[in-house]
Amino acid sequence: MMMSCRQASRLISDGMDRPLSRSEQVRLSFHLLLCRNCRHFRQQMQQLRSGIRRARDE
Amino acid sequence: MSASPEQIEAERPWLLRYARAQLQDQAAAEDAVQDALLAALEGRERFAGQASVRTWLISILRFKLVDTIRRQHREVATDLSEDTDLSDLDGLFDGQGAWQQAVRAWGVPEEGLLAKQFWQVYQQCAQAMPKRTAMVFAMREVMDMDIADICQNLSITTTNCSVMLYRARMSLRECLETRWFQQEIAR
Image (cartoon, rainbow over all chains, first blue to last red):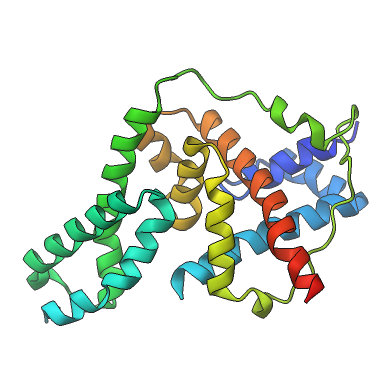
């Protein structure tokens, strides 16, 4: 069964702090392939991180 | 090569901004910066000159900040039970765990994130979070500490840590979307 958005968002967050396992990666990629909301979510998380870094280091 | 007292002092405003971002407590931030500057002055012969003065000062300040955060944590953490309950996020998802509301692309060009204003909004949003959550998030994202270091410093488990980071990101996402990205669109 495909993972839910709720699970995917948690894995996206975890993936920013630790390397995901092979199976986590595969299941997440599969979900992202089919889910635009979660792709946007992942992008937002990256924007959040880079926004903080840039503001902090300026 | 050593850093001159003037070079060290010149970085004070920047260090203060950095410290405030993680401590939220103005007085504690000033104390930490003061301690770091003193330590730097005393140890300025040890400045190797490979890194910039700022980078060197930051590495000193981080130690002071972690000390402060640890102290605060002891005061805040009256409840030492594991924080792994994410039911506060239930409203964001439906029964199947799908997003209740469409997640929009923020679509703001990277350059559009005017650093200084973004920082202000970020700090407002961080203040709206539970203290412990904000603390863990700042250690991770502002101070670049890895999970293992954070857990060790706060004596919490990695699960607890990743739950708090997840919650922080979800909360910041919502807050930034309202306070920052919508105003970007309106501009």
